[in-house]
Image (cartoon, rainbow, N blue to C red):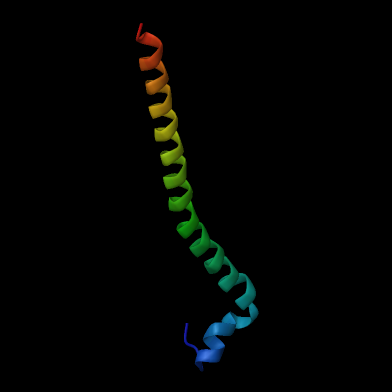
Length: 61
């Protein structure tokens, strides 16, 4: 497909809001997902360390 001008490209034949909104949402998801996974991983590791420490304290006489 050929575009007459940069404005025509960004207008996307009248579907600009849908097209660029979709790109924007995909970009947000690709940025936020690794951040959420990293936070969840940190929380799980912290919880496991606490559980291990609690078990060690329970085993000591």
